[in-house]
Length: 389
Image (cartoon, one colour):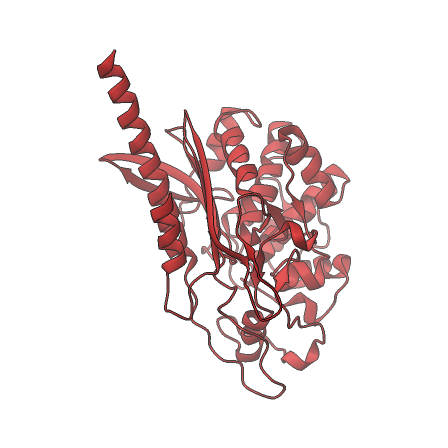
């Protein structure tokens, strides 16, 4: 995997290379995990910390599938809910303005008509009030009329899990996913020395609020005094998860090693955690956007002339997780694209500078290439062994 790690660390412009990278691939007969670069960059007072596979990663939006979707799969399998249940039957405050027709399936396929993003922490830092605010926000489009990727939908899905299980989301994750699989993953904040740094500061999200790009919001940055001007290590990078929801949310906040993600992927696709019928239901493409399954994104990739369906999801911090349906293949990894690249908060009164960082898609492409190469190697070894026999 050395070549693929070098690719990840070399992505982007010279001043935008990710600080560290880790790749993990599991096939039918082998598991390989490797890391390179820096989990904490060296400076004048510290020698830095090298990236290793044992360090926890801030999964960001990979939380949407590794926690929220996986938990809902378990609850569907147990008969505690169905994807076409109305959200208002769990969250009575979510009603009116067309919301009465929104189902769990709409939330998980990003077709509920919700706004993509809203900086809740500029209105409240109380988790209960934040979820109430999400329920009260007006829809941006008719229910089921368009695909619009939304953090808010997965926040609500997390709140549904809490209502059904009567547990807070972190405890529900331990009960439904981490405990049964023996994972060490959990919601942040986590001990800083157990994790890789995910970002230089809140500078990226500060700029989003300051400029209204890509989502116009009716706020100014001075309305919030909790902006973090320090490297983020062990605390969620996502502002809503960190500032408004106490580190525990349906859309972000989970910390995990790559090994744990490989274990989860194997359990999901291998029917260890859920029956095959539930996986099939969640794997179906969304008519409005065929690259969207239920919770997961969906793509078909070419593996030496043979099409292979992969359910996957990326995270804003540069993380990625996915598994194939037709083959025993799981891939997970990250390139810390916001660390060593976005810099500190701008000086008071100075305009927020645009930062060009490596895209999540570019990172995912390298990780999928590593997965396909692992399949090729396994096929070659199997063929060679058969010929020798």
